[in-house]
Length: 127
Image 1 (cartoon, helix red, strand yellow):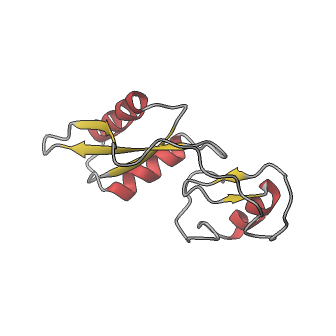
Image 2 (cartoon, rainbow, N blue to C red):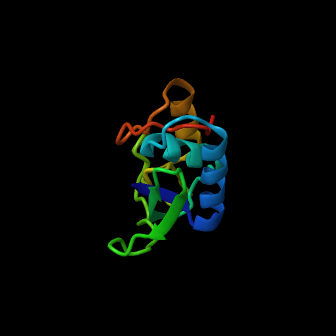
């Protein structure tokens, strides 16, 4: 399964966190549950994320490997805020899905929604 990890956290730290959680729970290791857990434990706005391939054996042992099919690149700079549509050079904050917004715009959005305004991907553990 795919797993997006903030570059500053690293795959070994994530693997240990997921393994500890799986050892302490009876929940199934579904991709969305694990990704939501990573996002809530390590929320990082504006940081590039790296795609890893994670496997969980039937004995619930976690391994994480680099995905060689996706080059590790920073996301392209946004030219406008997708919420207010202003074009400027203001620093934007990035959600897990790598869509970028003004901080004040995305904060206002997340007060009443729990999804990205662009792709509607669920955002967990930030607010």
